[in-house]
Length: 255
Image (cartoon, rainbow, N blue to C red):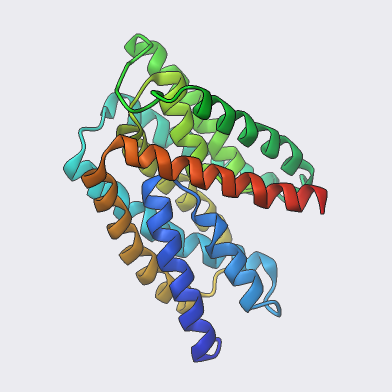
C-alpha cells in the first residue's frame, strides 16, 4: 500500500474522475494520469488494472442512479451493453500487440470531429429527436458499442465521451438520456477489462478499493447534478471534457 499522502491524493483524483465520468465520461483525464504520476515505480499494467477497479464501481453506481431517475430504452441499452462488453474484452486481449501510441493520432482526429460537429450544431442533444427506426437504432448501438468497447479495452481515454456522442449524433438521444445509456455500456467495458487484468494478477486491490469508494462518491454527485441540471448543462460539460481530451492527446501525439 502506498503512503497515506499518496493514497489521499489518488482518492481525491478518483472523486473528481467519478463525477466527470457520471456526467459525460472523461474520468480518464484525471484518474489514470494521477496513478501514473503518484506511483511511477509500480508497473503500468498494474495501474491500468487498479484504474479499472475504481472506474467500474463509479460507472456502475452512476448507471443505477440514472436508471432510477431517467427513462432508458432497454431494447437499445441491453444489446449495446453486451456488445460493449465483448468489444472491450477483445480490445484488452489484443492491447499487447497493438500499442496505444499507434492509435492516438486516430483518436485525436476523431475527438476533433466530435468537438467541431457539436459546436456547429448548438441544438444537438438538447432535445430528443430520434432519427432511426427501432431496429436500425439497435444496430447502431450494437456496432458502435462493440467498436467503442474495443477501443476502451485497447486504449481507454474518452470511452464514455464517445459513447455519449454516438447516441446523441447517430441515434438522436438527448445528452441526458445518452449519458444514462452510456453509463451502462461503460460499466460493461470497464468490467470486461477488469476481469482480464484481475485474472493476470494486475490489480492493486487495497488501493483500488479505496479509490473505488471515492469514485463512487463522485459518481453519485455527478449523476445527480446531471439529472437536476438537464441536457443543456450536460452538453456544456461535454464540450469542456472533449476540449480537454483533445488538448491532452495533442500533447501526447505532438510532444
